[in-house]
Image 1 (cartoon, rainbow, N blue to C red):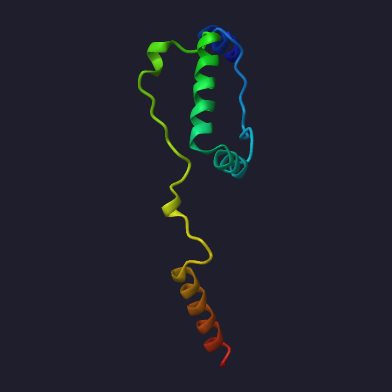
Image 2 (cartoon, rainbow, N blue to C red):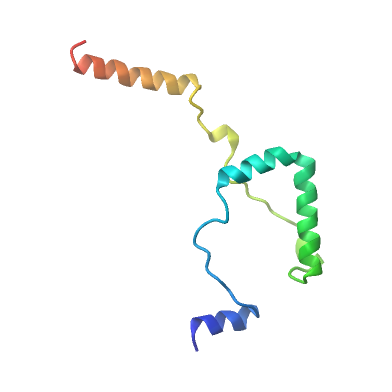
Length: 101
């Protein structure tokens, strides 16, 4: 039995391996900001309803949903942060001393 037929038998449909993401993560962030919180809630509700109509999910399976975000904004260092600028300044001073300036 081939791997493809095994997967088809287990899932009842064809399975395709997708190596690359469907879109660039930055595009997702821009769309999410453009839609806003209300728009994202509506998009999620419509997606769930479409999945129910297509019998991909059951109502019982979505009573509790856990969502994991890609990154927390507070963990991102922006070029305007003073700590990052201070580190760059220290590197420049060290390089200047090594050159005898």
